[in-house]
View 1 (cartoon, one colour):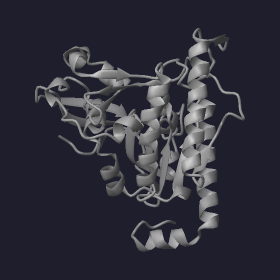
View 2 (cartoon, one colour):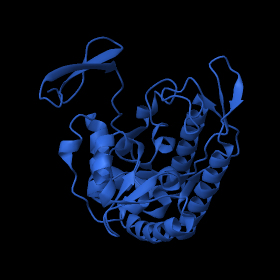
View 3 (cartoon, rainbow, N blue to C red):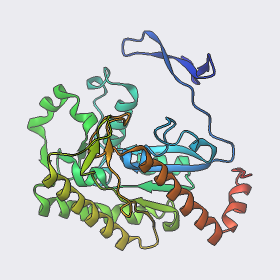
View 4 (spheres, one colour):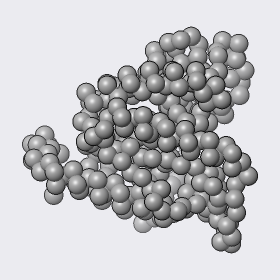
Length: 312
């Protein structure tokens, strides 16, 4: 297997991989730039609301690697799950799944978030509470919990197997759900600041879009407005609760601008996928917060340089 993609033209690169049956496959993709040597290290935790802004497609921010390197992503894990005890990952049930998706599920099972955060040493950490406000959590018992995210629910056979063994908790039982979430987020916040200071933690506020643009440019409303509004209220509650715990965390809030979903989104049109300009503005806010931090803390750049992370 080739660890690094091989460039074959100005626009495309290939990589040799092994599939589940141990056969070699040739995978092609559009060539992306490698992060610059001086790029700031970013870790994200949450959903595509935080992660897709660091995307190389033209729809997102194709030049982001001139400034940032995403060194770690904890994707679609509930805080309730992350603060539980590790659960043995049943690898044999996920061999047919794309390796990236399987690894994300594995991480949710094994609770390796803080281990990876320590190893990757990000300069800034960005999180959102989309998963916490919208996805189920599955309890094997009170301490062993996993997230019922979209990746896990793709494996119907595994869900059928564990159905008698788990209890499902979701936002419909909001009182019980928030009891668990409050305990988990307090524990999470206390531990998080031992790995990265509050001032370098960035909360990305998320809201589901009420409507979308068709490919022809026509604006339409999504059907389930009650669900969208209820989710947005819960997101706001969780964000405010977190900021009460860590009041010095930075915030990206794009609610001062009106954004909608769009049929041209590479991931499809959903209330969770925004028009292209959303991700451009998101990156502008990241740049602004980073710049403000360096203005207030000029010594950080010198300290970072001494550790071998040279900035030009």
